[in-house]
Structure formats: C-alpha cells, structure tokens
Image (cartoon, rainbow, N blue to C red; front, side, top):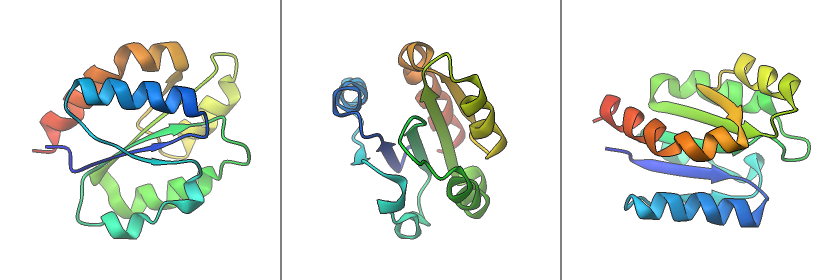
Amino acid sequence: MLNTIIIISNDLIFKTRIDSMLKSQNLEAIKYSDISSVDLDSYLESSLFIIVDLEIENIDLSLISKEKKTFGDNMFLVGYCSHVLTELMQKATNAGFDEVMPRPKFVKTLPDILNNFDKHHK
C-alpha cells in the first residue's frame, strides 16, 4: 500500500487537479511548492510516490537524484512538463526519475502508474 504521496508543484490549479484525481481513488497527498522545502529524511521508513512539476523555476534535479539513490526502490519519481521541453524531460530521466512525460499523458496515466506502484510496494 502507498505510504506517502507527495506533490511538488507551484501551479495551484494543476496541483488541485492532481489532488482531486488522487482523492477519487481514496488517496491523500502532501503538497509542496518547492523541492527544497521537502524534508525527505522524515519519510525514510515509507514508500514514497513523488509527483514533480519539472517546470518549477530553478528546480534542482541533482538534489532529487541524490535522494533517489538514498531511497532506492522505495521512492518512485514521476515528473511532468510541457511536451515541448524535451531537453528537460531527458535531464529528469538522467537524474533518476522513474517516469517522465508530457502533462497531458501524465493526466491520463496517473491512475495506472499509482496502481502499478502500489502492486509492487505492498
């Protein structure tokens, strides 16, 4: 079962949309506007599912990469951004994100991604 879902986005409207999708599946998320404000050490005993808006200004992908190495398989990172930002999507993939996709695909596939993660972390 998913222990912790974290949404990192400064887009209030889209963050609310993601939260609504999660609630429709009886899931709750902790919401942040910036990666640096997330204290991941407090979640070391959890399986983390982290959703990241890659278009956050000055996003530090190296910080995420470091945390991914610490958590290993207990952290699943999903990043999304505009479909035209292919270089940013590649950087996120290189930083260790498990799934990186354009925003429209993210909206369509989030329920399936959550279900697959949940199956592997029970």
